[in-house]
Length: 297
Image 1: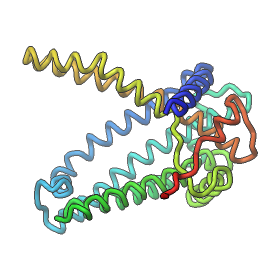
Image 2: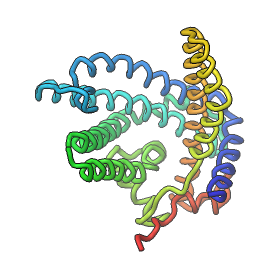
Image 3: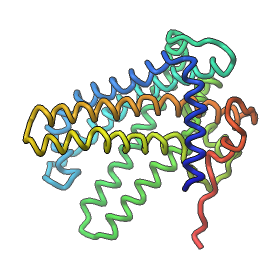
């Protein structure tokens, strides 16, 4: 556990030192975050009206037609979010590649790079949305079962689908940006790079997300929790609103920086997987990005 955190902290420090040279690149994850917020607000009402959310949570019944409409809306929701997130990641990744190449990237450079791969970005987003909906439907099917074991198995299966897709596509955006591959070719290439470099039976060994999860928890305990307790104690709607705003702003900021640092790290991993080129990071850190799955024995 301590080794994982130490490694994650080193990753965070190195990635931050790279980001310090181009702080304006935080505009890309900010754009992604704002886009997700707007899309969520736009799709929220149609989803509630379809009855899909109530049916999926087991709190209500919806007609079969309404359920199908809900699935379509969920797919479009996932698609819209994935397009925004993937586009932002592609722009940021392209700019980071320029920094690794010794150039001084600008925001316009990132946008230009993302625009050059727009077709692949949309196709990849559609693939992401499809996997997301499949995972959601598996979990929904489990919740509808009265068998407790089936519910657990459905959650496990959905989690395995999510994890497998995350690993296979881990380097998909860097491949799209650097090699100009289409979405399907980028996914295949990403899976091949991960498999050839770290092996087939692997799991993530922790990373920058570990550090930022702890930072988020600490921020909530130090700042958010006292405000929430004060709001409850005073029964003040204003203090409660203030607490929620503070928590959202803090967590959003942490997520913003963490996303940028993760994109930088993935570019380094792509270089390492593609041609064993080690830049900025120690080779051991890159080599241990994934580790063998623990044996079942």
